[in-house]
Length: 245
Ligand code: BV8
Image (cartoon, rainbow, N blue to C red):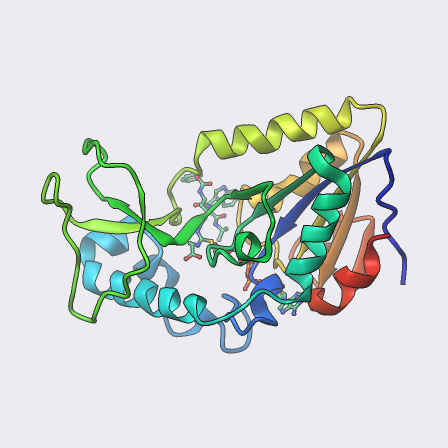
């Protein structure tokens, strides 16, 4: 297997998807037994779906919150922690995952692009109440209300058709600009993602446009596999610990 040299000249931007948490027992979205198999995505991960049936959306996210609370990081998460410790501020992890496992493994330089299962916020954008930590697994049939304004509370998750937090995108962009202009080697590695969802799936093109090197570590071919120069097929929990040196 090729190895990824993590030397003092390397800047590394990592993007992870559901596949990195699969070996921890967290279901992925697409493919066999995927989350979207029996939950039409537009009904459980969109503002329209929430407006139409908040009970169904809360049941979906409460089940995932309970599931994610009961699992642990795997060697793939641990490898990314060691890479961060080795590279310091020349490392950034952008994750599409909302299970919080990267932080639980010890990753600190993490951007949770699609939110976090253990955060809840008021669905009323005018309400002043900030998103808050929430480990409550709401019983089926319960939709929590905001104690400040009485509106429904919602998972602090980026749904389809919703914009990602501009601050998150800016942090990724700024890191990429610094890496590309550092005179060092700018590497982008995507792991455990089908490359189906934007803007995350477009990151590989941005890095290539900036002259960076691109790697994909995935169990199956991803939708955007052809856009990566290096591709290692396999389980991230097995590949990542051996890949970086
Ligand atoms: C937005 C909610 C502006 C959180 C999610 C450009 C072109 C086309 C469409 C668009 C575009 N720009 C925007 C869009 C629309 C849309 C989009 O991308 N649609 C797609 C479906 C075409 N994007 C958006 O709406 C985004 N917002 O861009 O705002 C805007 C607004 C309106 C209109 C236009 C633009 C918001 C995107 C966020 C949506 N929220 N989920 C949640 O409930 O989790 S996305 C959802 O998919 C999850 O967050 C998940 O992270 C993400 C990606 O899935 P993956 O992580 O890749 O998981 P998946 O199961 O698909 O794949 C797992 C992979 O792992 C597989 O390949 C498998 O082989 C591999 N694997 C499995 N086991 C292992 C493994 N690999 C390694 N080891 C293993 N052990």
